[in-house]
Length: 476
Ligand code: NAD
Image (cartoon, rainbow, N blue to C red; front, side):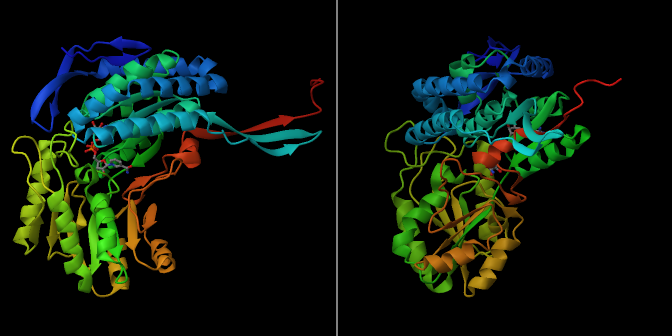
């Protein structure tokens, strides 16, 4: 049995069965999570549908804002306990886990105060009124991955609820506990049924996504799952927002100073042990600069403290799963077999799913480590002599989440940044996002936007209301 509960219709609900949650810093099971079967998913969606049709929630904007504000306060009060769970189930250092919860609090607060765009009046005279109004969609299924579990939920929950929808969230089976604990902390801020959480793996997600009462799927995760959801949503034309994988490139220009940029590039690639959708995953370097940049990055890698995220000094935690560790090992072995040279950073603990920050030279596109999303602390350096050709190669990749250019000439950098085929584009930074930024991937990296005004609109639909005037006397 699990000491954690599902959250349905304003109540903590026990499940008949449980599944294990592993601490990646030790490789050992440390808790059991409740498994929501199809029947339980049905009851969560039914509760959300009832809460939506009860009208009080969807018609009362001030109630929704107050609820989001209360939820923000309760989440803030639970910051430490949720942050420790993130570190234990996902692996990241505790300071970053605390920052993730603080970020989620800020998302809830920001949405509590985010204006809902005004209705547009098309005509308003003695003969008729015509107005474009916006309505919520109904029940939203929010399906999240394991790499940043709490903030990715907040980015769905806050706009969905502000817009007047109700929600059933399904966290990743790898990191369910932080979301279950979040529901325990903030659930009662909302009327029963408005916010529900069911945990489980793909089967639970499939049952939720396929439910006919679900009107929108808000998904963050892999391209493969995104593709399956997109196909299946066609059956009843569910709305979708898909935030998928990335293979972000950083393009260093010949006027960049390796000593100045190495630290930022290091963190742009290795933060969260590379398990960030918009981490730098390919580094294009002028051939003449490669040696200096490699040395600067390698010296930073060798100093990095890799260990259990609960220890204060840790800078990088483990990979989150044994599968992910195996994938990274396999990609590096494949790179070696193709002539890649592997430069490895510092020591890592023996137990758990650790991998040291690693740089690989001698590879080009056409190899899996360069072409695919490695999602781990391994960065290939690709030397080039022609920046235009490098840009073309970067854009030829099917992913289009983010890209950055590094230069001492910001104007030139901007010119290149605007030519990246990606939803995020940076000059001399990578991974930074301002609050309220709409984020969305191009090409394989997604569909639609999450965050900001655009993200909010993804949870509403237009209704054009027409009123004929002068006929109120009735028809004979
Ligand atoms: P995943 O696709 O395996 O799983 C994501 C979620 O979907 C989990 O909750 C999982 O249980 C559920 N799921 C799996 N199969 C399902 C199905 N058939 N129907 C419904 N739900 C299903 O992804 P993951 O491995 O957890 O996450 C890593 C991926 O997420 C990486 O590719 C990463 O780049 C991407 N990601 C993207 C963003 C972004 O904003 N674009 C952010 C974070 C992570």
